[in-house]
Length: 171
Image (cartoon, rainbow, N blue to C red):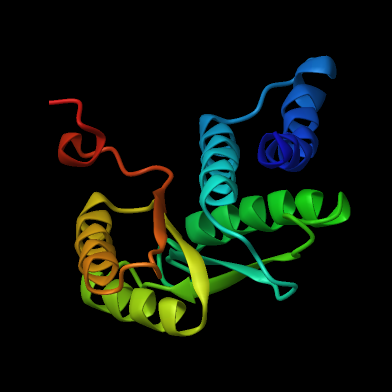
C-alpha cells in the first residue's frame, strides 16, 4: 500500500493540472493529455518495481529540437518540464527529483538511436519520444535489445504520440 500511496501522491498534482483547465472553462490538447497520462503510467510502473536512491530520476526526452519540427519538439519538452516541476514541487518521486534530459533526434532514426544509447549511458530510466512513427520503431527496437541484454537494468520506452498501427496494436 505504501507504493500505491506514493504513486497517488505523485499523480495528484498532475490530476489537479488536468482539472484546472476544465474548471476555467477551457480544455487541454490531446497531446498534453497523452503526455500527462503517459507520465503517470510510467511513474506508477516504475514505483511498483524499483527502489530508488537520493539521486535524480532521469527521463530522456528525444524529439526534434532543431530544424523544421523544432517548435513541436520544444513544445513537448515544455510539457515534460511542467509535469516534472509539479511532481518535484510536491516532494519528487519517492524523494527523488525528476530531471528531464533533452536530446535532439533531428527527425533522423539513426541519430535517435545514438541519442537513446547516450541517454541510457547518462542514467535515464525512461526514454520518451513521440514525433515520428519511423523513429519510434527504431527506438523501440533499440530499447528492446538493451533490455534483453541487460536484465535488471531495464529502461522503459514511453511513446506519447506516434500512431502507426504496428506501434499501437490497432491493426
